[in-house]
Image 1 (cartoon, rainbow, N blue to C red):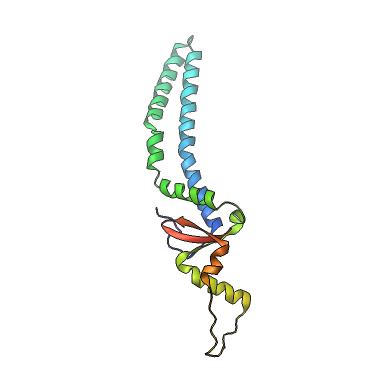
Image 2: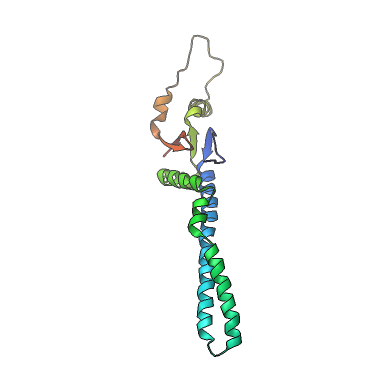
Length: 166
């Protein structure tokens, strides 16, 4: 899978949702084209049945029907869906969306890479607590990153584990 989020330390859930919507729209267009071709074919068949008394029009409609049938036959829906180049990414984003949906997911939840977890926690503590930077050398602040992880769930995305607050 090649997502635009590959190996990011932090991802906003809204970016994932936007990418999912973009891929789903592209995938749905394949089905919409098949539906359009099916409608054209059915309309041509219906028109052909209605013009039995007009031989010249019937010949033209038979040509139109044959053309519509050839276009319909050439459009291989199953193959196009299977060949959709972003199908794997679409399926993974659907899974992540279903797994993480709830809470603030739709409004913006930060997914933090397992590899960037400690840096994320350090930044969060620094922002929230305003820890002094000029501590004496014998004073050491120890952060329990595992304890901070209690309020977070994890999800796999593109082979990487991400933590998010639910």
